[in-house]
Image (cartoon, rainbow, N blue to C red; front, side):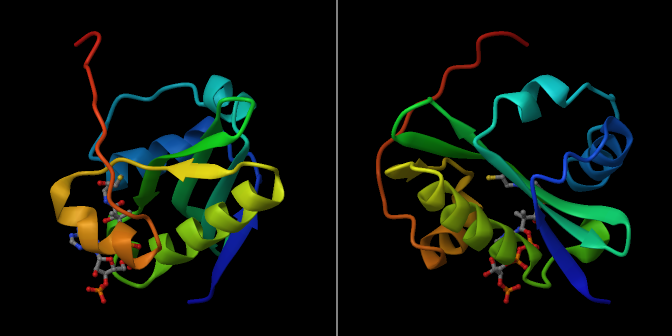
Length: 130
Ligand SMILES: CC(C)(COP(=O)(O)OP(=O)(O)OC[C@H]1O[C@@H](n2cnc3c(N)ncnc32)[C@H](O)[C@@H]1OP(=O)(O)O)[C@@H](O)C(=O)NCCC(=O)NCCS
């Protein structure tokens, strides 16, 4: 099936929550509109009209952009979809004026992000609430 990559399509909560349930095993629905309203860009993959992939490019309002929430529906993984999403997200972040594109990730995804041009850096993270 052809995969269609779209920039800023603003998918609704139903489509995003269905994707979250599949990719992140996250059954609790949430409202994504505050996230999308603050983004520099978001990039989505569609199989027909079904949302099957998503990446958010968050932004500090200046030169820093941040890749967040990269995900692909379980039944569409390992077909190169996330690769296409990150390539598009990188291009759009550059076009829209960011100088630095950051990402953090779990150790098993090091090969995925390195192959897309992200070089090694140290980072830190604190969980602020459960
Ligand atoms: C991580 C994720 C986005 C990858 O999506 P995808 O569309 O399957 O990725 P791609 O097909 O573009 O993968 C390209 C390459 O990256 C690497 N890769 C992808 N998923 C991987 C995984 N789970 N573990 C290790 N390497 C992985 C492989 O080298 C893969 O190439 P191959 O299939 O020829 O082996 C997807 O598995 C997902 O949604 N996972 C759950 C959410 C998550 O953990 N997101 C990461 C946030 S940082």
